[in-house]
Amino acid sequence: MTLQLWGRPSSARTQKVILALSELNLTYEFIKASATMGPKGSVSRGKTPYGIVNTTEYLEKNPNGTIPTISDEGFILWESNAIVQYLGMKYNPKLFYNANIETFASASRWMMWENNQLIPPMHDLAKHLYRLPENQRDENVVRTSKEKLFLEFQKVEVQLSKTRFISGDQWCMGDIPMTIRCHRWNILAKPFADFPNLLRYYRELSARPSFNTISAPELHTAG
Ligand SMILES: N[C@@H](CCC(=O)N[C@@H](CS)C(=O)NCC(=O)O)C(=O)O
Image (cartoon, rainbow, N blue to C red):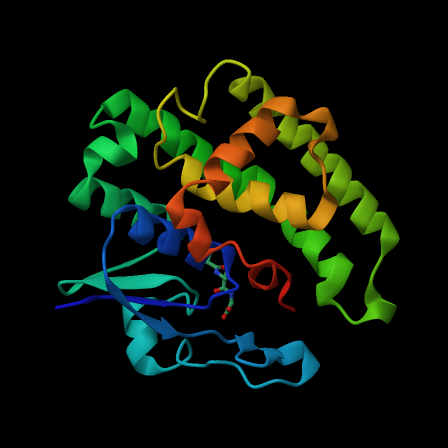
């Protein structure tokens, strides 16, 4: 049975799973689902959403009604980082964490950090740069979000001054969320002047074949 992924192309969390599936060379069926966005754009601009997430059938799989969700040979899983970890552990532990418990823990730590520290200011930045109608955008939120991101990415910069990738000198699953965040930050703020190691890292991540699955700028600025 083909692996199924429910999500939307412009969702960063769905993109994590898409990147993971690409790194693992797995084929899958992509079922577009969302309450907030559809093929022509956002509900806030009067467009029709992909739907599915509010159906009883979907809510039985994922009671949050969020995306992404996967079904792999009947095993259902939601929560993007958990999905990436599961896929790596099942299909290629060597690639995803060097089949090593410490690398797994280190990568998981950065994945949780991305969820807790990077997503909120990046979400605010995207919202106030292009998602909200122009008369609701707030320049102060844009400025403070950029400042927060600057401080957070400095932590990544320090790590990358010591290691080639986020959890060592070998690519691992911890680099998946970081790929999407570096790419979005580049699209939203062109920030690399003060981050030489981050720039070197971003270039290396973007050269991986899997990057093509999430590279299109419109996947990151859809609103
Ligand atoms: N912590 C969850 C968050 C899930 C989540 O909030 N996903 C967003 C998309 S990135 C969502 O479902 N948005 C509403 C929608 O598109 O219907 C995860 O990482 O999977």
